[in-house]
Every structure is written in structure tokens, then in C-alpha cells.
Image 1 (cartoon, rainbow, N blue to C red):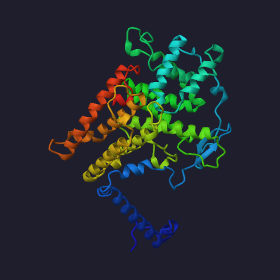
Image 2 (image 1 turned 90 degrees about the vertical axis):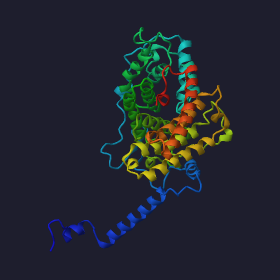
Image 3 (image 1 turned 45 degrees about the vertical axis):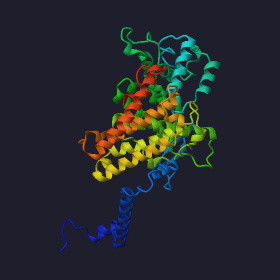
Image 4 (image 1 turned 30 degrees about the horizontal axis):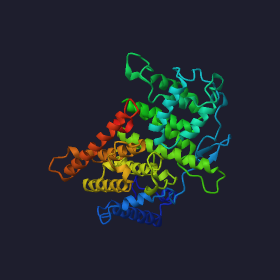
Amino acid sequence: MRTDTEPSADQRSARQDTRAHVERLEARIRELEAQLGKESSPEANAGDPGATARRLADLDLQSNAAPAGALTLDSEGQLRWHTETNAFDCQPVEPKLAHTSSKLAFLPVPLSSSLHRSLLDLAFTWHFDSWRARPSSPFFRQHQTDPIAPAQLVERDEFMEDLWTVLDPPPELCTDPSDSSTRGEPFIDAALELLSQEIAAPKFSSICGVMAIANYYGGTARPHRGWIYGGIAHRLVMDFGLHIDPPADSPIDEDLRVLRRKVFWAAFVNDVSWSLCIGRKTPFSLEEIHQPIPPFDASLAEPGTGALWPAEIRIQLIAWRVCRLHYSERGQALEEGVRVETVKRLHRDLLDIFDSLPDFCRGDSLTMSPDVLQIQLTYHGLILLLLKPYLVKPPDDEMARFAFHCCANASERIAKVVQQYQVKPTFRRAPNSVYQ
């Protein structure tokens, strides 16, 4: 007798719930379970500790699966990410919002040209150059040929210049002259007032701008506010479709293709750093990324040239996995034995990448360039975040002893790096990764 909860023949037919269909589904489930068990097995990489790191180094994120949606030109000829299920067409920005003059003066506090140039140079050297998204040379060429004048304010990227100036202004540039902690706030306030018109007509520099706002708040111990602006950067990246590399036969300028890659990886690295800092999983999904990882040749790397950026990306790809392990429900649900082996494997992968760096990146030189300081801070900070959960285990626990040894070494190296930050002309307050 059929019960009320049993589907009728008509219902089964409507769902195409045939025996053959069910058998195919069951076979697929068994196949996926076997694959998952193999990948989670502690023995999977036991014979070759560097196997995962080499796979990561050679990883091509353009998977066999086609990306969801495609890059489509809007009515102004700008690339946007568009899907068939989008309820809106690709519309242009509103001209009345895009080209509205700022009600602010160009800079909220008058600066001499020499001081202005010095502050911008510091911003690039110690902050923006580490992202590799906005080269300094073209900017400074424009700065020299296009002097600041009231009639030219609309043509200049005032939003970004307000942000670049905030990083290390002299003590007198404070909201409250009696409170040194308000140093630079006039510039961040000016940038925030410009933000609405910036988002109305976003550019690649807009992504860098909101990342700078996020990092400013992180560096001044206001991470939750910074997390919000980091989210805006992520949404702009997806709106531009920067996670998708246009096909080789696309009618796209090669310089634009290269710039899209640079801005994407800058945003990815920045977002993963934020996720680690605030203890949340990153909104980026590796399955959605269809961008090649920049090649890394340690033999050609020189300090201060940007050659270490591909290594930074590879470390942050491991950081993405650390985020998913520690801050996602799936990671938390792993059995303890599988979890421990995953932690050890990630630690080995980090060691392999660090060992592949040139000698000048791994020493304790007192003259480290900013990019070397950054990669050391990223690496040793990630070691701490990976192993920190095991420091609360009983002292006789094997993982607790292992974690204590590794974290003690990492902490010592971080202390030396932070000392260099303190004596260099960099942020008055620590950047995000130091704040962790």
C-alpha cells in the first residue's frame, strides 16, 4: 500500500526519477567520496613533502570548467562580468555622477610641492608597490607634467592622491593638533567624502583606493570598519570581471590584459590578508578564478624590483587554504587526525616556498628592502596563524610541542621585521599584517 508520503508514479516521472538515473547519481557519489578520501589521506603526500607546493607552483587556475558568465562590453565599451541570469543589462555609469566636480579643495590641508612629492613617494615605496597594481613611474610622470591647479581638479585622480597622502604625513597634519593619533585623518575624511562619486564611475584605481582605506583602518586598530571597505574592493573586482582572463582571441589590448591580471592578484592578496587578520574566510573562491598565476624565477629576483610578487601570491594561495581550514564550517568539521595532517602538509608547503626564495629574502639583513620585509612578515605571520590553535593544547601533546617550537621561531623573526618597520619612514601605525 502506498503511503501519503510516497511519491506517485506521475511525480517520479516528472522528476525523471528513473532507476537508471538514480544508479548514475549513486555511482557519481561513490566516485566523489573515493576522490575526497584519497585527497584527505595522510599518506597522500607522505612520500614527497614538496608535492603540494610544486602542484601549487604549477597551478593553472583556468580549470576545465568554463567560468560562470562571461565578460561583456557595456554601452561605454568597458568590460563587465555578466551572466545570463542577471536581471539587469550592462548599463553605463550616469554622466552627472561620473563627472561631478568635487566640493572639496584638492587637498584638505595645503602642502608644499616637495612635501607632497615626498609623501607620495613614501606611499608607493612602503605600500602601493607591494601590491604591484599601480606602477609609480607613470603616476609621477603625470604628476610632473600636470601640476596641481584648481581648473584641473576634475581631471586628476584626487581620490587616490588624498589616500596616498594619508600614509605618513608630518605631525602637524592632524584633525586635533593636540592628539597625534589623529595624524592624517583630514586626508582619509576627504577621500571618504569623494567615495560616492568614485563608485559612481569606478576605475581600476578605485579598487586600489578602497583597499587603501581598508588597510588604513586595519593599521589604526579598526579592523571591522576596514573589512567593510575590503568588501567593496572585492565587489568591484567581480563587477569588472577581473577574476576571468579574456580568451586569447578577444579584441583586448595586451596592456589592458596585463593590468587586469595585476589588479586582480593585488585584490586577492589584500583580501586574503584581511581574512586572516579578522578571522573569517575570504569571499574569493579558487573555483571561480580563471587567471594565470604569474611565473616566479628566483634566479632573476632582485630586491625592490617587484620580482618577489609571484612568490607572495603563492604564499597567499596557501593562506587561502588556511582561512578555509580554520574559519569555515567544512574545515571545522574535519576529524582531528585529518585536520592535524592537513596542518602539517600546509606547513611543509610553506617551508618549500620559503626555501625556494633567493638568499636575500631568507636572511636577517638590517637593510631589507620593503618587498623583502613584506614577504618575511607574510610568511612568518602565516606560520603563527596556521599553528596558533595548537598552542592551547596540553604541553605533552605532540602538536602542541611542534606548534610552540615553530611559533617561537616565527615570533622572533617577526619581532626583527617589526623593528625594521619602526626605524624606516613608513606607517606611523603598523600595517595590517603587523597588526595581526
